[in-house]
Length: 77
Image: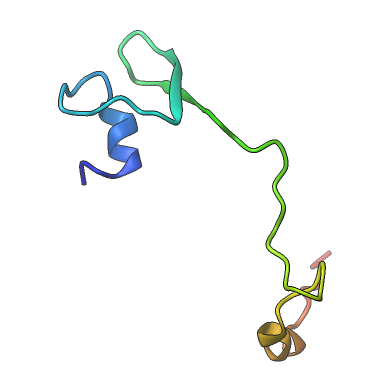
């Protein structure tokens, strides 16, 4: 559990065994540490979703049979 991100963010600064977080910066901590806000560092400016070679912008062929069975939701009002 000590290796989990949630535990490390929660316990950083209170437990001396927790190593510094490389990809997160603590930007706000309330008086009694009930609220802590973290900034994520080194975020890509633009995310490109993975593409299937030869089919830009389409789902993988293996998903075609599953997507053909889908049903659209209708609005209740």
